[in-house]
Length: 613
Image 1 (cartoon, rainbow, N blue to C red):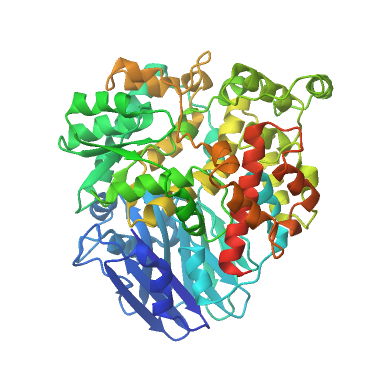
Image 2 (tube, rainbow, N blue to C red):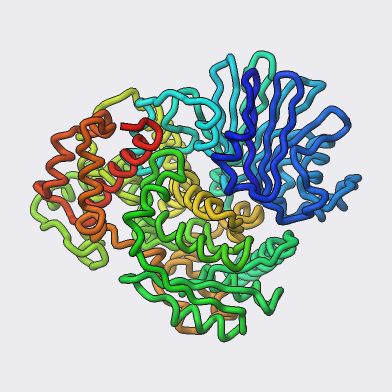
């Protein structure tokens, strides 16, 4: 796992890159220059410490900088008869590119973002993995090009201008949508996308080489038994490759749920002494007793970690600032603490990311398995809109009433708002207080939405497809990458392997949702591996006491940021609305109020870090 940066027609200061991104590559730092092209690489040595030095060159023509891990690289060497001199997957990647060009991307099972320089053709070739596990940002104003693994690094090389037009998606999602960033001429390369750039003209040619929507359009007629066997085999293979593709010890996060439990159970069959980690946060549901059942069953080298939020007021700005852009997901806080503690024991960690999106693990999937809420129905909308006027605001987000209230609200929506209400639901219902801009990011999101919901697939598949392309890509994988890499820890996600991404979307809906049971097929597979007490446990995730933070320990800090005379948020959200929120003078569920205030606060922390008040 690494970080890298580069420029064309612009000087590259290696010291600035190291200062901003040393956490991604503390083991080795090196540069490369050829004409107007400059690379700089920071390495976290996990595989072939001696032979994996980057930037890596070949034939006097090619050079590569790369962040990630190709788990099937040794298999690819044999199959395609590559003549490699090291054990590094970097060399495998470069030799595959030399032999096959962009077609090599379809062969890879891994997480990756890389750039290859071809001196003879005067071009750069960039690519990202299917799900977007590894990030890569590019600034291109047709005069100079600057790229980096993190926005904070890119900003250390030069200072981009803020682009107000890209903040609509942040206000609605709490994160920036896919390629969009808070800066002018700065985009994130999208998952499953490659870009060729001419180093003389800086003209770009983009290619979407992987789109999970293509796999949702396929119809799979495998029986439940065959599908179960296939998934189990794929998982075993995926976990094995993610353990063996490391010269360092690989550990596993172990919660009380079936995702990490299944990963740990299979991993323990490969490495019986695997180190496992469970955390308990003060004031949250304690998963340690359930996780301990798995650790004891497989006799893992288990560590239980208790974490408090006592230092939150001192840490919160730093943790939010790691993202280099406004980032709302409050579970970034516990994710950072968990990664920090795990790094004390291992450098590589397995996780269960992607299981909910690939196997339908969220509670909101249940109604979509019964009814396609994306279909237009004016009578339904009118009826539910009228009902909402008489229903009291829910006070407990975990109650059955809150679920029914949100379901009624969902049924009253149409278009993209249907998805936004079903998902993170940040400012939905109050979006009229967002100050109008030229919302290219929202139009891009609407285009994706329209493509997916107009397809001849079920409501459940539509929602899962949207979640993969929006929530997983723009939020959850960003969180995992930054939280782990801020602590020089590499996270690996077996549920996001090539074969699962290409196989599971086409499976029948009732394999994923049966009655009100989520992740049905995965739960049935898990019965072979996990103690019975875990199988029917509901999904919890990191339970963040956001409402308590906003009304308690962080109350004064939030108000100071949001009401600062130099605050940024009045450019995006109407100040009168924000003030009423702070004074609690709006009829709104307490949890939703906390989410909106947190979204605004995170935007202000980013702004202060980059534009000192």
